[in-house]
Length: 85
Image 1 (cartoon, rainbow, N blue to C red):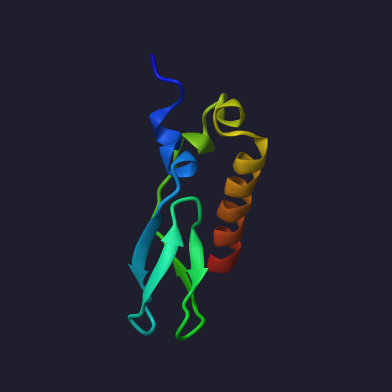
Image 2 (image 1 turned 60 degrees about the horizontal axis):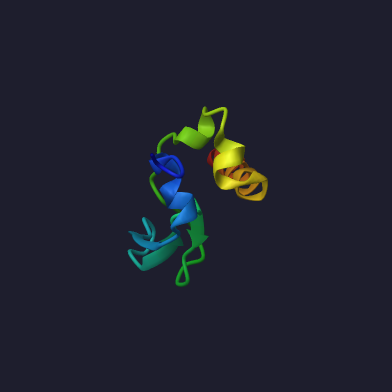
């Protein structure tokens, strides 16, 4: 039996990912619990591609990753929507 949902691993086992800035092509480090980071060269927001996760729909999400981490995830999702507007 799993101790937790495998879909929440990216929030529990945090690792860096590297994304190219679409503006200047600098490699930008974005951690797996984040959606965006500022490019150190041009200071534009750079987003990490991520679709919906189990945290967007699962009734056990708060119990799985904790209230603080779930709230931070939801704030980041909302911020991404606001930035896109």
